[in-house]
Length: 286
Ligand code: ATR
Image 1 (cartoon, rainbow, N blue to C red):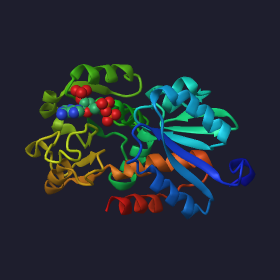
Image 2 (image 1 turned 135 degrees about the horizontal axis):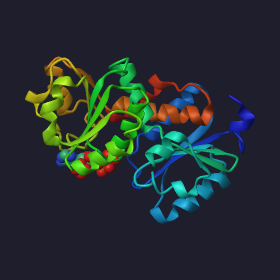
Image 3 (image 1 turned 135 degrees about the vertical axis):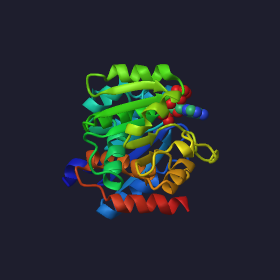
């Protein structure tokens, strides 16, 4: 770690997250644990910023010498006009969740999709090449994930959404990157037989509506990989149903931890202490 580079103003690495609301973010607890594990003196602060103040907030980040920030709902698109540069992934997805400040030059990244895929590969399925993947949902989260999945060279990606138009638009936008097919939810039964991995990106099943599931239990193909971005609860009804069918299940905590891990790696240039980060988040959920 090049200390003079990173710890510019006072010897402390300044990091944080902007969003609105922000009080319930688990990012501070996770990144504080990461800094402690790495032995880097610093701070990671949650900052509630209204839409109108996003530009000024980024000026403040520069003036105060923050090394970087995360950006969460509802500012992932709002911040873009105020950045000097977007990396390829953020540009393609059209949303930013991580900003690196190089002496006043701000670069935007998106680590949500790549964080998700790293977690999926480490925890559930090592190789996605040649696989057939069904993504449920076509919103902001699905966008990041589908883009990151295309980098893994799957055989085919189906995107099924309640509003079929959105799934078809996503498929059309990235048709050069992979064989992506958009469809309505009622098209799912016809393709389930060829699917190796199912990924839920919708909010169906999230706390406090934990009875909900985006796919009826009897439809879940036995023995495949089923993944859910939701991490509250840690095991959604979809995952519990899938487990009963002998599927390999993968919850959303790993995505959250790994999007943070990639962000920390961009800020520090060091490998993130992923297990310390995961433990801190889990402990804060008890
Ligand atoms: P996020 O950033 O979490 O993806 P979003 O962009 O608002 O949030 O997208 C929410 C996704 O969940 C969409 O795919 C949405 O489907 P629509 O495009 O049809 O709205 C999906 N979703 C939310 N609630 C749903 C429900 N009750 N049933 C099915 N899909 C739902």
